[in-house]
Image 1 (cartoon, rainbow, N blue to C red):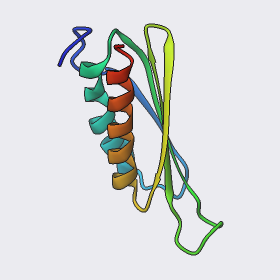
Image 2 (cartoon, rainbow, N blue to C red):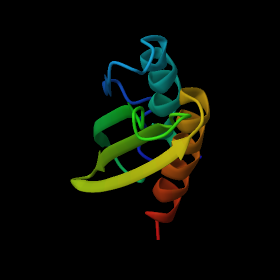
Image 3 (spheres, one colour):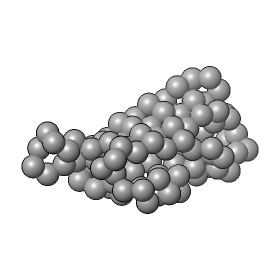
Length: 104
């Protein structure tokens, strides 16, 4: 389902805290960039932030937050999971659902 003619988001900005491994950046870009195909218009901004709950509990969790700006409107999603891959996968699914709902 392609809507805006954009195949991928060209510039996905990813920020990581020190406890998140560096290869999470590439994984986040690979999962978030293709979301352009679900957008009802041009994606002007894509930003992902990955943090952990380290220090707050025995087993830290990864918190993933994304913000996409589509035709000037912001879409935000946040998820928490055990690993960065799981968090990014869930974030991808949540953003895809938000983008599809934004067509209504």
